[in-house]
Length: 304
Ligand code: GDP
Image (tube, rainbow, N blue to C red; front, side, top):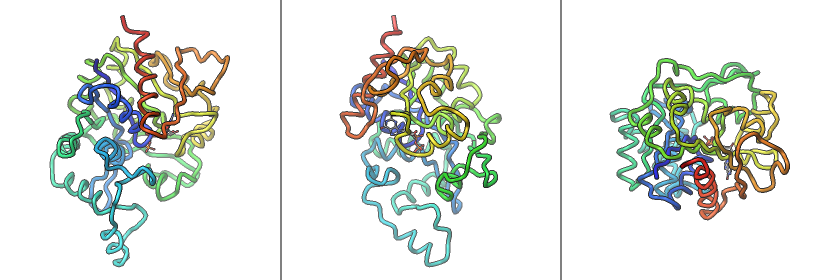
């Protein structure tokens, strides 16, 4: 069985790691948001790709929620001593990945090289090799994703979101094939507006999802009317949406065959799609595997 997963960073990486516990990693393709990518100090940074690579190679800092375990910070302190910009934290090990990326090749190629070097057997693909920048119109003006997320700590009120450059982008090599070959497509519990929408906006990707006969199953990022982390719930409220599974279903519309929701959520509410219930908070490795299993089992109901 082959699975294609649409994913952002932390929330998505948890689910992809869970999938590797219940099926062969080689049968999984992660199609990763690159709308958060930006150039910092001349270095190409791909936060969601990096989170996937660190998580799947066992290098992620689980406590911090981003970056590498056991990271050192010599570069940042040297940079600070020079009066350089310190709003975005680049650990020494992390820096190596960005420098390697700068040294050459398409994002998909440098990602494949890092994955091979670190023994990651999941196929990790950027949604596109072309630059796409998630931009937010806010009460503090127009902000790029990292300025909003890191520099402004998600405080500005978001009015609308767009993906600069997306109309000129193309899916990275392998993305459409992975969707075509997939027996199941899973949409990770990543932020639908900031992490999944950029992927769907790359010309050709949504059309491929509409063509496939494979079931498309999402895992909800909402538990008990709250997001587990990050700006998802705040953003939903600012966009005038209820912080509820109904809004997740409405957002993905008829792309979706099924939704995995938390055991405690929506008793008696007809969400209009097939649902599976499990505790969807992924704290331990077993949680990750259980939520992944719930998505795959739900997909099975739709396959002949
Ligand atoms: P980012 O790109 O690093 O911000 O991460 P993602 O977009 O992949 O994930 C952010 C979303 O993941 C948030 O909306 C969280 O609610 C959701 N999330 C994080 N951890 C969990 C979890 O354990 N369970 C569920 N159901 N959602 C989670």
